[in-house]
Image (tube, rainbow, N blue to C red; front, top):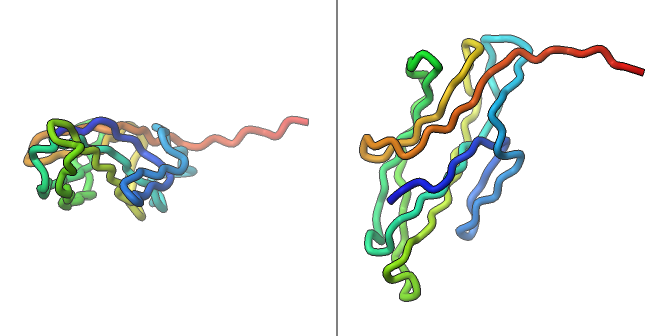
Length: 141
């Protein structure tokens, strides 16, 4: 099993085996001040599982660390269910899209952060982003 792609989005959902992403692929949050509470974002990713490993339950752990390597209080544990491979998938892979919504994310300082996605203590992916102060620019005529 491996993680083939991961990104941050404004919103994401999985329906009928497809990953739907709204406002995805960004890496910067512009905030008016810090500390701040960001209302909502999504972490979207796709796992590729060998068909021989299905059906299975894959433990997933998501954490957040800052640019100093300090752990953020955000910690998400879950399990990804992989269904039985169909006869046409024998010897191939099963792609399992996932979307995790993070509401009310507390960000205490400016700088770089990264979501760390693990399974069985193995890091599958790190998804970086940064927090900057929003600056107002005067309106030009």
